Image 1: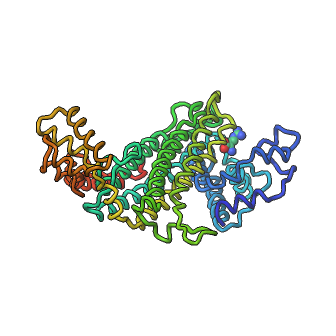
Image 2: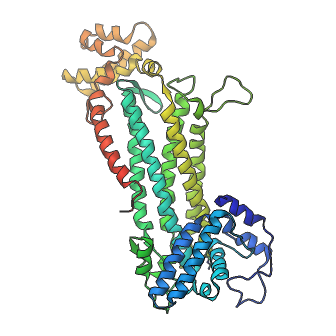
Amino acid sequence: MNDHEVGDQHAASEFDANAKTLWHGRFEGGPAAELMAFTESLSFDIRLWPDDIDGSTAHVRGLLHAGLISVHECDAILHALAQVVSEIQSGSFEFAASDEDIHTAVERRVTEIAGSAGGKLHTGRSRNDQSATDVRLWIKRELREVAQRIVALQMVLLQRAGEVEGVYLPGYTHMQRAQPVLLAHHLLAHGWALGRDIDRINDALTRVDVSPLGAGALAGSSLPLDPQFTADQLGFAAVFENSLDAVGSRDHVAEVLFALTLVAINLSRIGEEWVLWTSEEFGFAKLDDGYATGSSMLPQKKNPDIAELARGKAGRIIGDLTGFLATMKGLPLSYNRDYQEDKEPLFDAMDQVRLGLGAITGMIATSTFVPERMQAAADSESGSATDLAEWLVLQGVPFREAHAIVGSLVREALAGESTLRDLVAQHPRLGPEAAALVAPGVSVTRRTTPGGAGPIPVAAQLVRFAEALRRWSSQGGSTA
Ligand code: ARG
């Protein structure tokens, strides 16, 4: 049974007003059905169960370390936690109607299994530090996977760039043809942007990698807890400095959402280009059947749905970020139940970015490029206008003047009397040597600036990108 099925099972279960809450001592009556329906989080925080088990395991060891429970009690609780794991994994875990979140469910079951020892599990701990700990552990795990998938996409971009030596296409500004660029250069431009996404993820992870366990509800505890001990048990790089801040901040969640949103935006931009490139109008690339869809009505259609949804889903992921920022705004210290709202946007953004990376990677890996179409588009005569102006500059003509000379020739050529090449050949300041620059395929070879779009700098760039990729891949999602 997967996480979602477990959640569905809970949602479908009958509500039992007599079931015991964690706070039943203070209350005469049980919770109203409407309260449970509106405030429960089990239906989505169920997926934190492995992290909840890890957090509880560390906490129980911490209680033993602090002398608050006996070895026997510690063993009984750890044994019960192990049983909870196998019950959840096998699908036999039975959720109770009173399980408002995963923390409640695990603690209830541990107490059922371990008896009075189980009742000590929550000693010195609140669900506030517990859920904050779980989410941090979950982010560390999941972001690593996202970073690895970014690296996989970068590898495909590098591989495809290596395959298309010499192929060029128009480079665009304002979506108007500007200057020819090598296809490898265009593909690697996305690769570098994705590298910054990995850097941002790793940077955000340094702030995620701080244990809040031991902060309790908000102020720590009178019990001799050792937050450093549990942080070490859980593999956190650091421990909280301030208990109010530990349970009362979620800026790390917002940062992760921002990093994910930028990944989504980068995928969206690639998607938009693929939509254009695979259109009949551009015809720069063809989709593999496995990464395209057909139309239910129009027999001839082959649609770039992955590319479109990469674009479309970026909108909702931006919504995940902005919605959560609005949730955080104005919350006084420390924990407020509003913070329960960190999970759904975080889970959604992480899931969609992870899935989008896989789909876009497959789409790019299997697309067929159409060099003839790309090059025909890039070989329009006016693509070499800047080269002509720069040729004049090398003859000592001030650039502004050179720009005006070539601009007026382009205007004349567009009027249709004569080709640009002929006009250049006949022009007293230009002539046949300059006219040779207007020939197909010449312009891109003249882009020699380091980091530029021509064959010489792109060959160097391929080496530098491969080196950088080794670094991103070794750091991919690591919290070091
Ligand atoms: N489900 C809650 C959350 O995600 C757990 C913490 C609840 N704490 C509380 N005091 N009610 O934030």
